[in-house]
Length: 434
Image 1 (tube, helix red, strand yellow):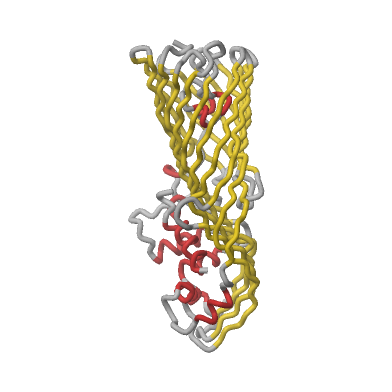
Image 2: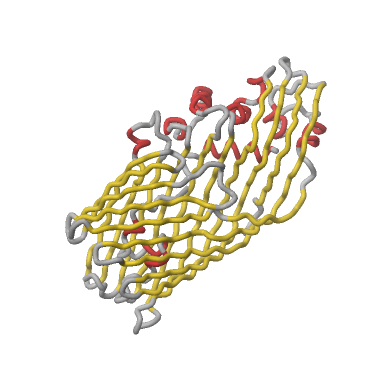
């Protein structure tokens, strides 16, 4: 149980330093060396080049109820006022959702067939993410303030979920290119580093008004895979397809992270129905951590069962993207996209997102753009982006950035989303678009 408390607290306290997923721009930039990381159909897009390589970094934080002021604490110290502000943002009786993530990945793509220009791409990266879902603000209040603040009140919640995981991935991919069709595939080996996962938590609890008793009725399912080294192994596929309808219009589709990880660790499953009396139990959090009340072993034993070692196969949240881009002129392009996450392990609410992106080439080397979207955990957002491609002695040096949601910076009291995506790339040898 103390791991559950550490997990919840960690999600709140670390929200300014952890993970995620903004890719509205790069998937419409096939000439960028790292575009194949996002859209496998773009692996080795430039069949004239010998080597394409680069790295990509993405960060995101999103919530459907918490404002940016609540998500980011300026001095990194969580005061009592900060805790109360977080609870005030949340809604009662409906899902309160939160996600944060960090991803970094590199790619080396080299030509393996001179006749067709086919490339083989090697990739390596690391992903971290954290989620929680709860229906009642008081559930988080128990973690932030302890049960003393709710003495005499009956609290309950259903279908609470929280998890965090870190895994590394090693990939091998390639793509086929014809005049109109582009199809790519990447297979990835997943190496699970650590994972804490709480799910199916339903509970009702009441602390006596004087702390003389506590009742708890509920059930939960918890896994801790947090040992040294790798604690899980799995695999996943990235698939991509693009079609050039004509010189102005391209449509595309892709799916990423279609796979699972088999985690090894400690499993806790329990159905609890108890009334405990006889000692003062006004800080359940400290009690379960063992820092308060030296004779409370029997209560801890009732709440936390014996550890069971075991394994669980957990599906990754696969990302599906559909989109198209149309050239309005030689300098202007307009893109539409629909994206979302599918799979059994999402946090309880559709996270599909529809976006529109306008891009303008302002010189032979620079392109800038703006975007707007609806959907996702934060509901709506808008942002900006830019890319550069500079030819140096027959080679190309590239860089790009995307901030798909800057609304949280402008409206911190009402907008909870914030994300960033950026990277660099190199194309060695003459490029087809020289």
